[in-house]
Image (cartoon, one colour):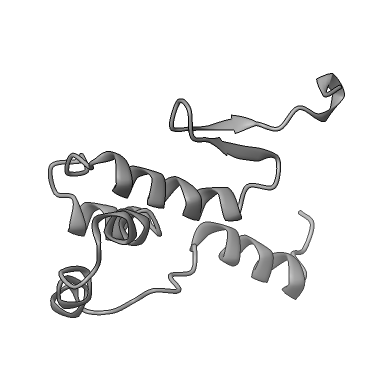
Length: 101
């Protein structure tokens, strides 16, 4: 049987146990979330599965008006360099530089 080195053991443990970077009591999470606009509330909820389950117990987001939805998509667009926000349809679209004229 092959022996497991310390670095291999550490990699296995890290792979099995994901790190939680946002560990606060639920009460504090709710206090923070109640002061956020709907777009930022949704963005906070999407930071982790446990945060989503806490802030969206039904598994769905509250209905957003067009302004809040655009605000949320602008947040996403900042972190998606291969897409752009189409204000015509209100969706993130892939940026296809090959077909540009």
